[in-house]
Length: 317
View 1 (cartoon, rainbow, N blue to C red):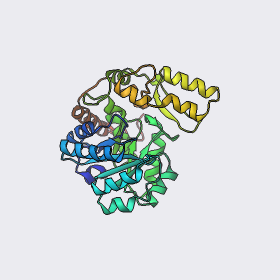
View 2: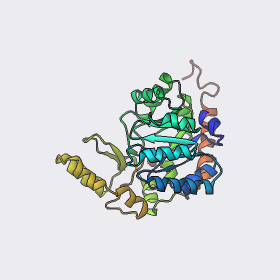
View 3: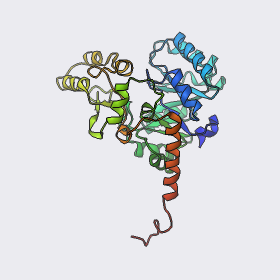
View 4: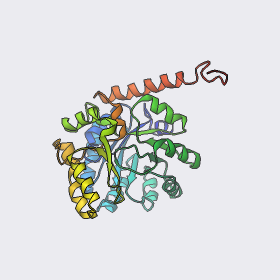
């Protein structure tokens, strides 16, 4: 697959750049296990991003990525830093990376924006993106509206650049299904939350392991900023304010610092436990290396079982 061939990976897996979760230490652990780890820079300053790059290079000699939110106030300085540091992979969100792509390509960086729709994917292809991460609405955190099993084949049928599947993947059968839809790699977020090395509070890890499908909700649709997370007192208050017609500023106050509180202190009342629908499929926390190996053993088994002799015979019942 393109992702593994491009970066010489054991597994064609990109770890999502989850803010406050995707630290240099965690990203390095993912890369050392044979996938491609990313540092989530979120609202980091350029100085903090430089320190994070230094840290991950001290922890791994394997390829890694930096996830850049283009709304970051220091985006210009960070973009120049990523080029100067010749970061192997840059994934982007919350904006158009077009003005930076020539500089990044000149430095040898691969650029892979996250996209929730065909229209945006075509725009990214047109400005020179090397691939796109097609994130279905099953994902955790901020999401689009198109489901993965519609988005992935829609993009693979209409783009010339590789498509990385994201959103809703938690087991090997889902990897196999995505591969049959023509994708060139996978990005996972929620399954990495349930790994022993993940630097989240135990309350967060337990929430992922216990989550049922009916307990994972979406807030923010009314103000155009949908976000998928676990139902908690915070989501109930947010949705109540939405129904009352609260403005964006009032709603944003509730979310300010909420993800950090969930990750760092496990605050069950005001923390935002972002996770995808795939959490309902995850029952145990395991080491990263074990999770990756498990996924691909399951995928290989599923592909072998698909259309075994007799199963696809048009005359069989």
